[in-house]
Image (cartoon, rainbow over all chains, first blue to last red; front, side, top):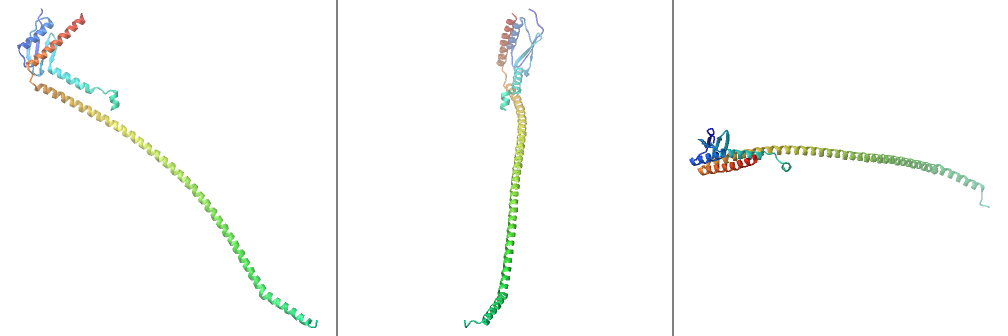
Length: 89
Length: 170
């Protein structure tokens, strides 16, 4: 088993050691190696975490989800009207 | 035959001629002059009446000609009036059509502008809605269970996706 560069974990409060271990276990299973995070608390994430592992970013934060929802809603409004809608208009 | 005397006969004859002469001079000539003058006056009156009749006929013909001319002028004027009215009506209809087209164009432009305004308003509402949504999410206190649920969901999805990638690669 090779050891990765020190991975970084940004996590929204509240959390406990079990939660950190759950995340480390998940990434260890994924990369087939021990993962030990440098943990940073970040309240701006709202909930969830962002992990930087082996040069990759894993974003499971509520902030990103909300941004995705907002962009989806805006895109759906700004879609040009169909021909039928144009005729009705 | 005893009573017949030549002198008497002569006297009677002279008497008769004298009487005749007197009557001729005193009655016949004035009456005949009077009748002649009367005839002349009648003839003149008839001539004047004839002239008057001719003048009347002439005036009547002129009046009829003038009436016919007036009728023709009236018909012509009526025809011109109808033509002018038709032209005016056509012009009014053209103007109305142009105005209607312009109104339609203006209405379309206004509708397009209102549509843009409505879109901008909807966009603004959506942004504010997203902001409200986010603020409500932030306002609700996130529990450790929420975080655990998010993390479990992430790894479940990640595991599923990872397996699919491996299947594709193999």
